[in-house]
View (tube, rainbow over the protein chains, first blue to last red):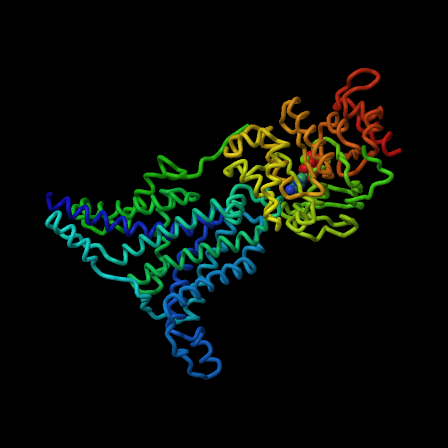
Length: 328
Length: 272
Ligand SMILES: Nc1ncnc2c1ncn2[C@@H]1O[C@H](COP(=O)(O)OP(=O)(O)O)[C@@H](O)[C@H]1O
Ligand SMILES: [Mg+2]
């Protein structure tokens, strides 16, 4: 096999795995958008906040330490423990659920029946607030997130591909883990939404919230539920990105990568988020590999958006945008 | 047949006023009583306030920025106007909305199951699903179809069946005849009658189709611009010359259209 093709295959595979990450973030957007018609600008910050909380809990940091020390003249920093990763993850998930309850109580509940643009603006406000809250609680320094996921080159794949093609592929173990976790997450979400009472209620609300109210489904409960799920999806995304490149403000910018995924896959489709993520992940790596050198590189910054725009022109509802049922 | 004199009043609406968006006064003092086990019709033309009355009872007004500003609504003698819709469903009062409002991406069976959302006796739900399918055999054939792709008549059946799944004591049924062929309308009303007689479900039924409604109801109220202008046993309303003339489209002088009539004449006769 020609070397060029092998390199391209390697780049493509790595792109697919990056795509899984994009898909994870896009998934959070889709869940909230489907259930409440809200485009949640804060989804990226949610991932940052979740990752910060996880690190903080795991390392036994005292939340609001700066504030407490400044006010009371104390010198608190750490509880002096290190929690096992599983416990820290469970606690962080609990915090995300709590956050969903608070968001519903303080924001969403008061904006019932408002125009989507108002809700969108509320989520912008939320994004900045959460960003500040994250800093205040856990400090603004760059943190290392390590929950013991395997990292570095996967030797098996390296050896196998070397024996087969005479060229070993570099695939990061972390990417493989992320892919498996994302797959498990999507499958469980699908099972939940198809086969449980609350999943059914969630889809009912997405279809017709007036009718959902009329059968006694509480919209407030459903909102807490979707924001909780979106928060936990954000936690998973935050763990994966944070393990790779540390937890810092730029983590919240992964939302920018999810936007073209949504344009491509449709705002209301879970499969769309996945496939959209994979297409963009792989597309941008291959494009960078083949076309990049000809036009001076750095195509990964804009390729996704251009691809999404092309799609928008030809298929505005996205690849998997929900079919609108028309009946007279 | 229901004897109005002996049965208890299940639902009582006392002189309610409803305002939308804080300014638009839509109901201007509506009172009605719904006896247990009966079919009570709420009649009137488009925009008379029938839907608003039903939503005031089921408390779906809030989500439309509507509010009951005066009067009271009692169910089994208890004030219910501050409860949320879910609490009312648990009390046994459920609304079937005008225009059916099926969950169109859910299957017919999933739609029916959402009706049981508030129930805690999960073991009994399967039996009730069978009960609904005996009233609507058509739905059993279509149970796996997406509701959005079923016909208007089937969607009306889904909407009523979904309400039945909540094990209701009272169903507030809004314009079941809307947009359906006369034959289907008759079929739907026959089922309503059967549910009323066999399951003992009380109905408050809003209809523009006075003719059909008065044949199936036991008692009727006629609404005009947010006021009750006439009420009485369905039999009497059917015989009433004004109702015949203005709502049933017939009179001694021959058929007349509603439009031809000058409103002051109607007011004078009914409010006298
Ligand atoms: N959400 C709303 N906001 C403002 N006005 C409304 C709203 N819903 C209904 N109305 C008005 O209230 C009046 C009664 O409407 P409705 O109760 O739907 O009558 P009906 O069901 O008898 O046709 C109409 O004039 C209608 O325009
Ligand atoms: Mg109406």
